[in-house]
Length: 88
Image 1: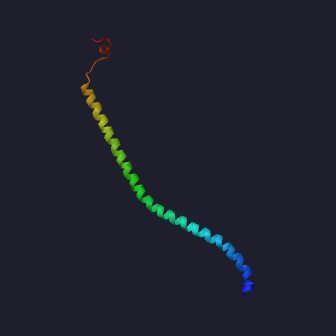
Image 2: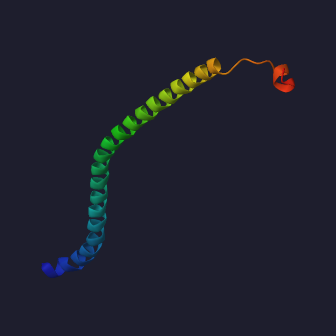
Image 3: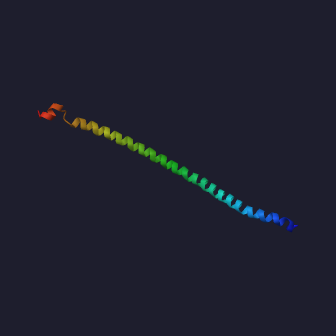
């Protein structure tokens, strides 16, 4: 009986080895993706926090620029363009 089945079993085993290798490779890649997505969740939160911080810094720089502009307007003497060129 085994002699009758052996010609069918040998090619079956030969084809099963690469199929099993492909399946285990696929399973490993999927596990890496799943675990990578968990790590990405933390990274996305960090990126969002950095974006908020950059936005706050932009607002702060904008406010300080406006303050410097308003201070410089009050400190500079108002001279006409004719006085600048003629020295009058």
